[in-house]
Image (cartoon, rainbow, N blue to C red; front, side):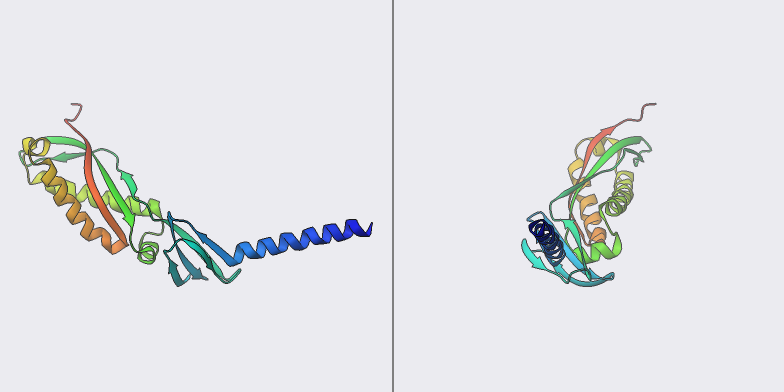
Length: 176
């Protein structure tokens, strides 16, 4: 009977220690970057992979992906300089460059995708409007996409985002 109570007590202590260790250590993978907050206030950023420590039950670890992410915006209709309509599907490749600024401005990946999609839509609309339909579809497509990427890159840096590339996945005439 005493050995049963001892085993149950030992198991309870082991579970409590495991729970405490889980609260003390942060395992940062190669794909992750972490900001540590205390009651919502920024403490520090951890971008190096490995084991890090935090204050148990006081600090919170918020993880962000370090890899290149993709935002595949829904297709939209654009009007060219010669007043012809074009349906295009832009794709944006990006990464989180400054986790703290990212967290303060857009909070998470879905918020970032919404902001990026708006920026890409706006910049692409301006670029397509300054070129004829034939040049958008043909010869100047690469230059147009580079200009869109450059201007989106500058605006996205305000959100802690580094835009790697913007491309048009598909460009067609409207169904009509």
